[in-house]
Structure formats: structure tokens, C-alpha cells
Image (cartoon, rainbow, N blue to C red):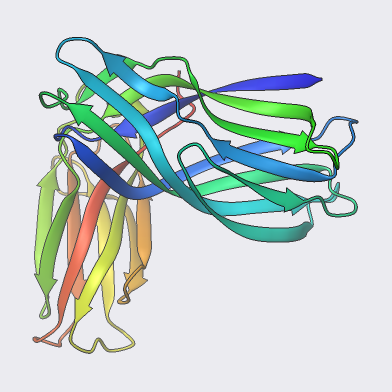
Length: 269
């Protein structure tokens, strides 16, 4: 039986004990070997992502949500299934006729941490090397016939905690300085996710997310309509110094809560 090992970086926040949840953007692609495949299984293990004795810190992945996609040799999508898997559990997906490769897309990851103190912000730590996710092919008797083992490479701690901002119409602007000197090479994107909306937005109203340099030149920009759950991202650049969030609306009573967060490149070594 063949097993492929993939190293992954895991994002963390520098706050205290508890559950930390938020947007993720991780893809695991697997080209299938010539083995018996009745179904696929994706599992979240109970292993630790990061652990140290003093100060005492233990971090595990608590839950992931995403899409499981099956493709044929011409890259046609055969089937897409949703998954929502908690720690120590798995979900299976029947193999489709003609499938040659599959993709696990994780758009939400929840971690659980037990710390005596804060983790140092803007830090790169070595992970445990433990297996956190396992994608496997199985025969009709649930015997594993091949697998992808996703292990911890680095733990990338954000420069600051994810922040929820409140913006109102006519039009407000919020600007955040980027303070990720040590982890800058691991930052792939900056995210904005609409968490709540009070009032009635107009169809033309938008939330704009921009990456700026030190002189306020726009390096990257993206926008999205106003609705709970809408997400946007801009690609990070090495000259990026600020994040600007603008609500374009003339509805003065409109109140929008937005989560701002860093997106870690899971593949940088």
C-alpha cells in the first residue's frame, strides 16, 4: 500500500486558551494510484499540532469544513460533497466512475488551544510533525488501499489576533498596519469576512479590501457585495504595509461587522 506524506503549515493566533475559528484556504490534491477504490475517507486526527512544556501550550485541530471534489482525467468535476468533521472523526465519499484525482478544499478550520500564556505574535515555530489529516482510499470492507498523510511542518503565529471591525454607511474607512516582520514570507493573503449586517444594503453597496504600500499606493484590491458570509481576499506582496477596508454605501443606517485576518501559505517550507 502506498502512502504519500505532505507537510503543511498551520496558522495560529496569539491569544489565550480556548477555541479559535476562522477562514482557511487549504487544498489537498491527490492523483490516484492503481488500487482498489470503493470510497474515500478524510479524517481529522487527535494529534497535537504544537506542544511545549514551558510555558505549557497544547494546540490541536478541533474541526474543519470544506468540499470534497472528484475529477476525471480531463479535469471534469464528477461530484462535489460538503464535509464538516470534528477531531477524531472522519467522513466517507463514494468513488465516482472515471475518477482519476480528488481534491480536499478546507475553507474553515477551528483549532483548540490550552496555554498558560500568550503565544508570541509574529513567530514561526516548528510543528510536532504529527499527522493531522489523513485522506485515504478504501475497499468495500473499509481496508485502506492508499493514503495521503498531512503532517505539521511549521506553526505560523499571526502578528495580532483576528479583529472584528464595525463599519457604517457613508462611507467609512479603516486602516491597519501590517506588523508581520518575521512571518511575512509565510503570508499568502489577507481576508475579510462579513459576520453580520444591520440595516438594508443596496444592490450596489460593496465592501472593499485593499493592500497598500507605505505611501498608500494600492498594490491589490478586491470587493464583495454586502451579505453575511461573503468573503474576499487580496494577495500579499512583500512591499505591503497596510490593509484598508472601505464600506461603499450611502445608507447611513447600515452597520456591517467584518473579520480581518491573515492567510498563511500552507506550502512554504
